[in-house]
Image (tube, rainbow over all chains, first blue to last red; front, side):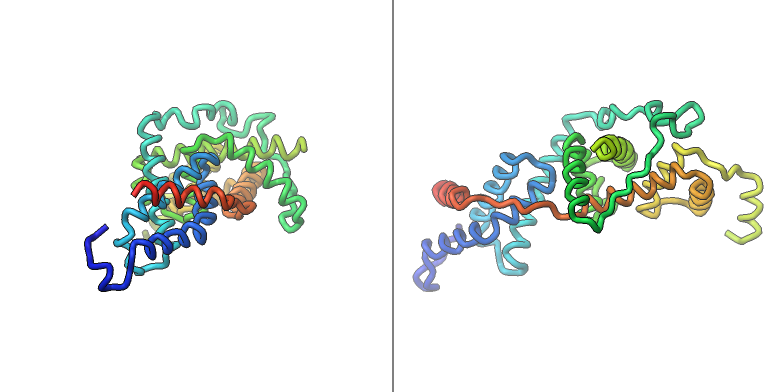
Length: 200
Length: 91
């Protein structure tokens, strides 16, 4: 914390703490939800939220109201999570991601859809709330099977609407890594969804 | 490229692609990374292949599901209190 004459400005340590406490009460739910949506486990999400508030407290003076508090906090959280995934990717060979995906599993020697792997009719009525809930439950189970790294690529693309170049830059992967991860995971995910939806 | 040049190029090229390639192009198309030729190849393939048409449609459904907000997740009051105490205590 910078040294300034607290009494001159009528601010005290206690006021800062009150402000900080209100930030936790007002914004921790949103941050927690954001972390969960990134595919983090419950405990990891909570840890990241706490780390975010710790950083925010340490950087309390840096917050100059150039944006809303929530935007600022989410930015801190987002950077921490992206760092986490970048480190996770460094540890694992990108080639091993989607290694369950084998071209031969889905396509025959003519590169056509293999017998037994043909996409089937789903007929999900997305306007029917009951069906949407069912489908969402299955979708959640199937995306849980994706590796965290595959999942974050999806989130960055479809939820954040980021371009591939930016995703590659933030995660520290190459463009061809990106396409391999995305494409293979899509084909696998589709197959998982279909299997569980149709047998439901 | 002029129309004549394009027509000449297409005549000499195979514009039929396989399902495996089509499925790749369906993904890439989302980010507008297909060339004119690739777009034509994909369009032709989808016109005759109902399996890949299905894949394309299901791909869109999956994209929509990713964007849907899930159920609300909240922290308990105790958990929030714990954060406050933990952070302020460490300072």
